[in-house]
Image: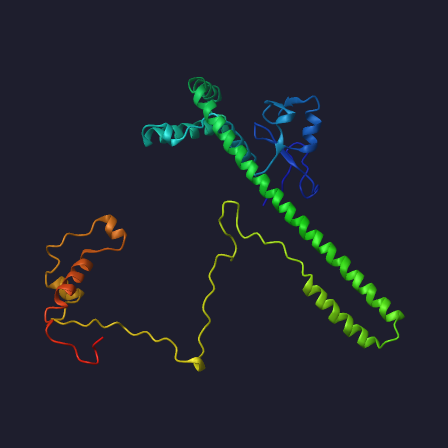
Length: 321
C-alpha cells in the first residue's frame, strides 16, 4: 500500500507520523501545515487545479483516495436538496429515473464533466421544488434531533454506570487497605499467636464481606430499542445423558395402523395416474414447501385408512380404555 504523502511538500506518514491530510471541495489533498501556510488570509487557490477555496471548508481526509473523499462530499451536498422519497412518486419508474438523475449529477461534478450545465440543472431543480425541499429538510431535522437525544441519553447512562463502578472499586481498595493496616497493628501489639490472629482475622473479614456484599451494577444486555445482544438471549441446552442413568433415546419410526388396503407410495401414485387430474401447485404454494403430490398422497391415505373398519367389533380387553 502506498504511503500517504502531501503532493506539495512531499511529507510522508513515515517521516511525520502525526501527518494529517486535508481536503476541500476540489478533492485535492494537502497536509495540515500546507493548508495553514497557503490559506493564512482565510482563502486562496488550490495548488493543483487553481480553484478558489476557503480555509474553513478544509476537513481531515477520511478515505485513502482523495477522489472518493470528493465524491462523498458532493453526494452529501446534493442529497440535502435532492431528498425526495419513493412515496413522492406515482410510479416506481419515475422514482428510478429520479435516482439515476442524481447519480448523473454526482458523477459529472466529481469528474468535472459539464460542470456549468450540471449546476444549472441543480439550481432549476431547487427553484421548482423549493417547498418540497424545505419540508423534507425539516422532517429530517426532527428525526436527527430525536436520534441525537437518544444517543446522548444512552451516553449519559453509560457514564453513570462507569462512575458507579469506579466508585465501588475505590471503596473496595480503601477497605482492603484498612483491613491490612488493622491486621498489621494486631500482629504488632497483640501477644497472642500470630497464626491464630491471621486465621481469626480472615474468618471475620470473610463474614463481614458476605454480610455487606456490594450489589453489582446491572450489566447492560440490550440496546435502547429493546434488542438483546451478546449471549444473553440464548437458551441453555439440556445436559448430555449418561449411560449409567438409563438408556439413551433411540429413534423409532412411526408405523401407521391401516384398517384397509395399503395406500400407494410416491412412485406407485405417480405411475398409477393418481395425480393426473390434480392441479399443480402455484409458485407461492411451492415456495412454502407444498406440492400437489403431497396433497394427493394424504387424501389417498385418509380414504383407505378405515375401509375395513367394523364399529360393531369391540376391541380386545387389553386395548380397551
